[in-house]
Image (cartoon, rainbow, N blue to C red; front, side, top):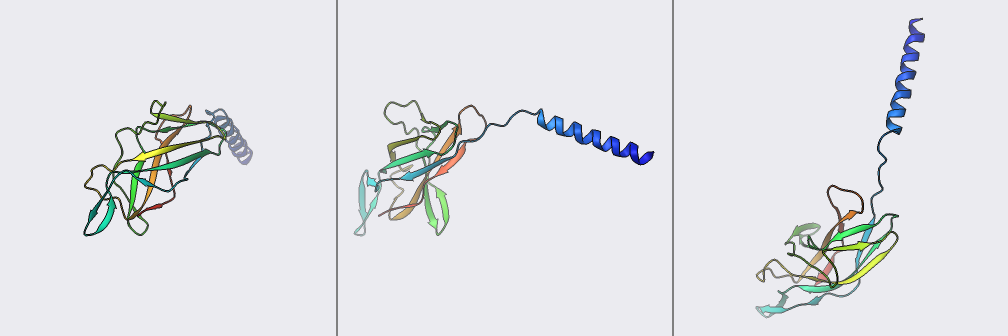
Length: 164
């Protein structure tokens, strides 16, 4: 009798647990974005030291963002892109976030529809003209949100590219 009572109690607990899990709040899927730099970087200005030129005033590149998911996303253009430089092989260091990188006709966010894409020319400026940007490998870090969710932003990084 004791064994039957324990088995019944275990079965009831398992059923209650399954129902509690099933009655929980449904989770929303996260957006899944990729970013590709689709043009060669164009320097905004250059300087020379000891006969070697380097980029000082930032650069522009064309970027293409694709959304492979079934949910919409928004990229925060006033919080990025953040510029990361390779300080040692495979070691990335942030050199700053622009104040606000608004593109024409936007309000600080770029909408990327489900299964859609957006392309634009992105200007990137160093935090100060004293930071030489070249020659080195860099990448862009964007932050984005899945529409209809809250919390911390997801991060989206480009593949590294050269500034020579």
